[in-house]
Figure 1: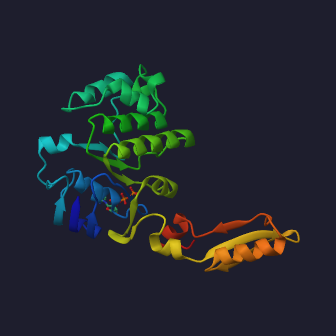
Figure 2 (figure 1 turned 45 degrees about the horizontal axis):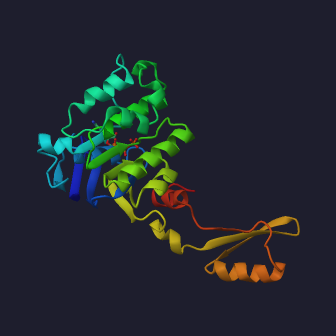
Figure 3 (figure 1 turned 120 degrees about the vertical axis):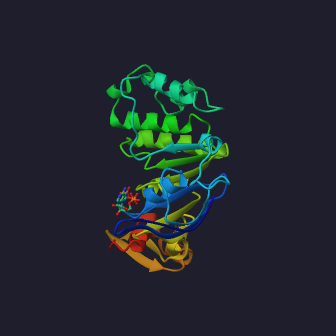
Length: 276
Ligand SMILES: Nc1ncnc2c1ncn2[C@@H]1O[C@H](COP(=O)(O)OP(=O)(O)OP(=O)(O)O)[C@@H](O)[C@H]1O
């Protein structure tokens, strides 16, 4: 996927102000950013669901401004708000959607993948919010897409469902599906994405792998330990040396030893200009 100089304005609001992106086949790529940053607008343009004002966009070799049926069948979408077919059951709904795709997955396997086997015969109307969201995910993957867009997929999930969802995404990525994810959960981006882009006011303000984004990997470390009944902390460029010194001083295990660097959240809040 290649994007150059993408812009989109709604009246007075410049929602996307010149975005360049390269997302490679088989990669899990996360787009982070505060509310209103332009993430959904960008993703909807890539999905062929929204027109752009300017810029070049190529997704699976096709301009999403002129989508073809064959191209659509290679793309899976989990939108931010999905219209659920409330009166049908989970199994009926997933089976129904499977018919739209030339090489769909087995509906019962997909229901199992999203952890809804026990609810397969329940009407979607009767499901909880998090369970409905899992139906949305099932409908996004039923067509065995080459490229999957997930817009805040785990909103409303309990922690266990999120972990299950992460495993599902990791499995799809292992099978070669390219995944573009927007999320407000930084731990989710860190767990899943090989690369992330931080969008603020319609522009990309940082891009890279989550472990080194914004100089994280080379930032000073904080070594913490317990001594004389209190916590001590030392900020240092050479934490290994500090730990070795402490090991000598304590003659073995250092009580309560911790070594930390800025979290992805610290770096993210710095990038979007919110005081941490
Ligand atoms: N259909 C629309 N008409 C007018 N303005 C819009 C429309 N869609 C989005 N906007 C505006 O464009 C800007 C970017 O919105 P967008 O939905 O792309 O942000 P986002 O990063 O996805 O936010 P969130 O995290 O809240 O989903 C916002 O200021 C929003 O109010």
